[in-house]
Length: 115
Image (cartoon, rainbow, N blue to C red):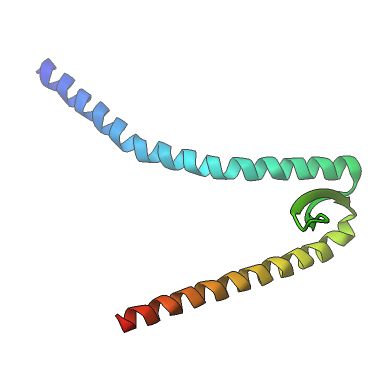
């Protein structure tokens, strides 16, 4: 009887280990996604508390047209305007990419219909 109890507990241990794998994977995935965002938020908050200004990344172009990022400290009142500018620029870029994808898909569909 003692041998059957040991086998039962060994089976339960194996079952627990197998079922804990997806749990630990999902836990690691969530922490891996949340931790970098929390770290960035902490840095932004610390800079805001120390300087009274908000750090803001903006994309600029040099004389040769190469893009580069700059980190500016701007007053909190200007952040909304700058964010709206960035949102507009990103929206324009996404619209251009969507148009290119549609053109490629239409070209592929027309080539498929011809074949």
